[in-house]
Image (cartoon, one colour):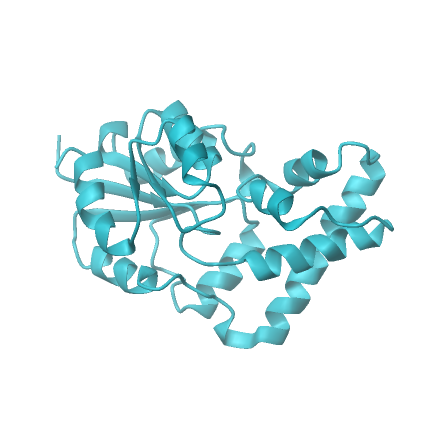
Length: 225
């Protein structure tokens, strides 16, 4: 087996801090149907799920038509916020943008993404950061069942030709960890995102790191050194 490392990143809560956008857009989505958005903790607890799954979990009493309107309201609010923010709307956690640059310098590292974002949302974020061609495989909610279904990781492995033992998912939620375990790849949780460390531990994270600087060594351990 070659020394390739397939390094799969979640986005929201792992690479970038999107909570201000998520909370504002969720409020806008609920307002479309005259409902009050849930409190912050509830909203952040569903980050990582596909938007339709997230809305249904947050508002199980809503009708199917209401859920469609809420999702569209969220998306419209996101587009408006992105346009208002301009080119600098991607707020990377301190050290994460630099870490990606560092990892990309190693030829054996295959950088990939598995996110609950839409294709439009992810493309806009990567464009704003000048990273349109940075990742070898980018998997989004438009094309897969919601996390923690392992479909995204299975597609990443097909795209890269990597084996599961060479791959690791890095994320901030239990959904990321459960997805990785279901796909048979390594799992690393980060403690700066939206789910508490206790949830990452309960989901079975192989390791939990407390800083971006700790990730390179953790990635090596998770992918066989």
